[in-house]
Length: 373
Image (cartoon, rainbow, N blue to C red; front, side):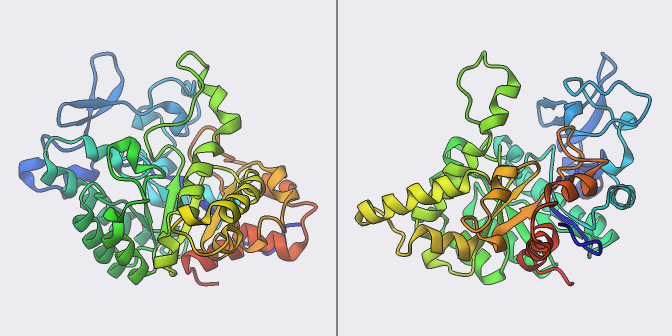
């Protein structure tokens, strides 16, 4: 069970970027085409970026009491709980929810910062990435560096610029970077190519964690266009399974033994099946693969998974190494655990030995992200 003195660490939460983030940080000449929030004629709010209009889905936020909380509606900042976008309010939400620390992904930027890959102005796109990362370091995480773990996004459509940004943010205390679970769906080379070597080298040198969030390829596997949106939820981990296989077989983790990979919001119950099948493929088809070590060994040394609700994963601890499982609360998403995160975590870990429960709730994340005890 969860030890009473445990300080749960969630490895997957989100920042709803505040309206002034880019206007406060972009050079003056870009403020009227960079991201900014505007009132729409229908009474909603939207982000404008160049000629793009992007609304925030209410289900990605937490609506303040007294307002319509239909998750399919459009969110307004004056109707959100301030913890969505304000770090001091976030800490208060975490205190009430029993969560000690969080690793936060962006929202408007998309989970790997790939919103800006569609930009017309490459200089503006890179400046937007830098501005977001500076906000994370100077404002968000600076509010309490022990509890708001800094994660950066990269201009990974420009490998040299991405490697440069890795070194810049690492020097400023960033502990992790987001990357696409499948860059080919964004029109970029696969992880089986040597295209990414300068980026992997920089990440390895700086000791940062690579976080692969579901949806960071801009595409979730779906059976058909007319399948209801919720139909993807039972198999949402399929994206993480594909990404995990790519990283097991691509040879990246042979060439860069210091890199660690976190699969975010993809669950963990799929791990035993995937590792079993990957071991068979490795034994039968090793000549086709760049990997030199068995998949179970690579996974145990380099890879981490996390869960919201996943009794299957907890029943498989042992097959899934107990040192490689973390937990997430997914604030402020409507599908997340707030405001009952700690209570639900305690329920999930009720039958798990205390030592293992402590690792899952806290210890593994502390070790992965280099957080003080």
